[in-house]
Structure formats: structure tokens, C-alpha cells
Length: 365
Ligand code: IPM
Ligand code: MN
Image (cartoon, rainbow, N blue to C red; front, side):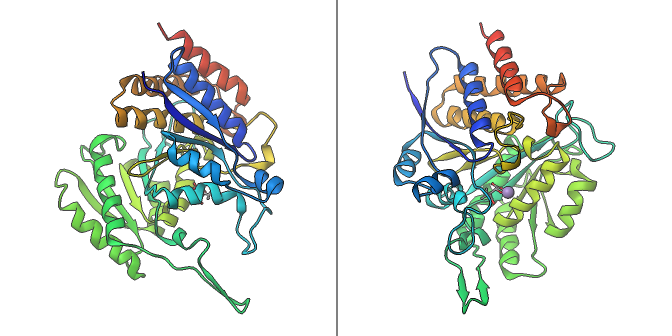
């Protein structure tokens, strides 16, 4: 009977709280005889302060060899490298580049019971995926940009043909499988770029258009990223899958999260050819850390994606069934008003976690 090894890194701020919640939920969903085995490893800003290392080599090895990686959140303001960037982000950023986790899948969905700042939207009206290219773009300059004479700072944006091709293919495959609800009877992929101004984005768009020819069943369109920021507010119901360069995807995913309840409702899956890394899209929120009020739904939903990804990869349906149960129970809890303070509710992290777990165990035969 297979045992899937899950490398768990709690990280900083609220990271340990939301990560522990997700682990409990996964255990409750799989029950006794669960094929998952969790091992914890250190990384992040706190670990850097204690040891001088933000991402110890044994943690990297364990993550590379694990069947999946689950993370809370990393980074603390002020804990920085000599170049001024945050040390606590090394874990996430090095994993992305060193394990080539090129596809960052960020579902944006408005659940029943969750308040949106947009007027006139109801549950189900917002249901799309932001597919963020996660292995190149501007972020690939991290650690290698130049600072000249203490006066001129340079970071370079890199786009490769093969990198754009594989993320574009992923976008079309997601649109075929799961990419949100079909809109007006059409499934579409929106290529989001700034092709009107910069050559790297014009290249992104042209390679996307070439790939699109292989998917005649999926509608395609282009949107400039500045206009996209507006569309996500005024017509979020239009989209199925939005694909974009790394940093644009980063920015748009926070905007998108705001429309469906905030960063606490933003799950994420970072996938490569071999490895999968699962964490919510939010940061470590040090201002509310340790208070027991962090919203665990984003990490719980990311853990459900982990089960789905593992289940598909290994042809192990138990895991997909557990993922579906976690999603259903999460939906029920939200619809029944089990809301954390960021969602204008009063439920604590542990109340939410307990309630999700209780429903999972009650529903198991
Ligand atoms: C995200 C986060 C990360 C990013 C940080 C934590 C490095 O904001 O996953 O969106 O900037 O990509
Ligand atoms: Mn981000």
C-alpha cells in the first residue's frame, strides 16, 4: 500500500497556524489507513534569525524527494538579505526555480456566504483560474540583478519560447478540464500581457497565438494587463483561464483574491513536471500571527489541490475523493456562516478547522 511522503514547512507569521489546520483537515478527510505521511522541515525568516539559514539544504533535499510539499507562509518584514530583499521568501522562490515549478494555478472563486466588495455578484458568478507563469519572467532576476555604484539597480525580464509554450499549453488544458465555468457557452483562455509596449510581452503573445492553433475548441483573446486589472473588477464573470507572465500573475492574483473575500480565500498550486508545491497565495501576516484568527480556508483548499494532483499522478482515486469531500465541506462551512474575521465573521482558526474536520469524519462511512 503506497505511502505518499509530504514535506511540510510551516514558515513564518500565521504560516504554522494555517498549515497545521490544513494537515488536520487532510488527515480527517483520509481517516485511519491514510496513505499520506507528513514530515516537518524548517525554513523561513524565523529560521534565518535563529541559524543564519533561510532554506537549509536538508529541507531542500527533503522537498525535492517528497511526493508533495505543503507550506504555510514565509517571510517577515525587515528580515533581509544584503541586497535588501526578504530572506524568508527564499523557500518559496528557490523551490519554484530549482524544481522548475512552472505552472502556478490560482483558482478564483466566490463561495456562497463569503462577502465580496463588488456589488451585484453572487456565488458562482466569479469562477476562473489565473495561471501564473512561475519559472521565468521578471522574478527570474531574483538574486542576479545588478546594483551599479550604489546608484543604478537592474533586474531583467526573461521569456523563453519553450517557457511560454508550456504555460500556454497548460492554460488550454486547464480550460478543457476544469477552468472555471463556461461563459456564454464558451470556454476561453485570455492571454494577459503588455504586448503593446515591451518586446518580451509581444513575444509572449505571439508564442501563445501559435500554441492556440492546437486548441480550436477553446476561444482565445488578449488583454493588456492594465485593462485586465479593471476587467477583474467590472466583468469578473467573463473569464475562464487567464494566463500571464510571472509578476503580472502575482499582482493580478491579489486583485482577484480581493473580489472573492480577500487573501485568505486564495488557494494556489505550483506544479512542475515532477514536483508539486502547495500553499495559499497570501503572505505570513505577522500582524495577526499567534492570535488564532487567521483564515485557514486558502491553505485548506490548497491542500485539497495537493490531494487532487497526487491522486491524478498516481491514479489513486481515494485521494481525489478526499479532495472533493474537503471542497464540499469547505463550501458548506462557508455557506453556514463559519467565517473568520477577515470575512467579517467571528470564527477562530481552530473553530473553522474543528468544524471542517468534524464534518469530514461524520461523513465517512
Ligand atoms: C505569492 C507571493 C510570493 C510571490 C512571495 C511570498 C514570494 O506573493 O505567491 O504570490 O511574490 O510570488
Ligand atoms: Mn503574491
